[in-house]
Image (cartoon, rainbow, N blue to C red):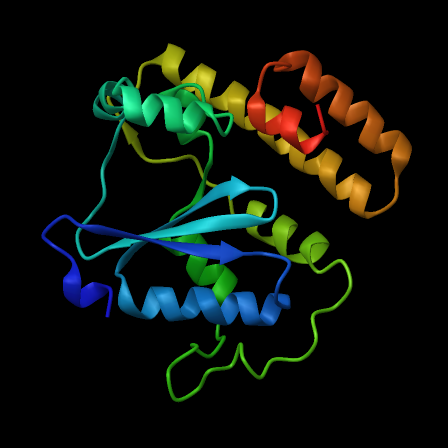
Length: 204
């Protein structure tokens, strides 16, 4: 239905929750998306969820244009509220391209109207996010940026490294490793203490 309503160069963003189904069912959801959209990518939006972004045409990540649009008041204020304070920080949430998603989905069957596998899936295993999140993050490839100078790329990489450390800290918390959680989250907060998302997550 979504694809039938797309305008030329239109895109679809599909919410992908991580702890609400087993990893095999996450693979099936990704397969469903790939079966419809020839151009697809994965972005991390929050520790417990990601976004699948798809289109019928190639999607160019132009650092100059993205930076210009980020300066729009409504865009900037909305993203800053969730801890994304710059175009470089936004692009640091990129995870992988279609090839990476294909590796993740592998031979998983798609979820369809006549095969609604999620509705009849087994009970979710305990701490399933500690399996699916690392599997998805391991798919990382650098985003295919155009018009990005060395400074922009360095800032993007720095934001990504901090975000990945935050995710590692959160996984330590799920595993009950208080020492590792405390060490990593202290470093994260020292590096970006004003980040609204990090502050919200740790209850500040």
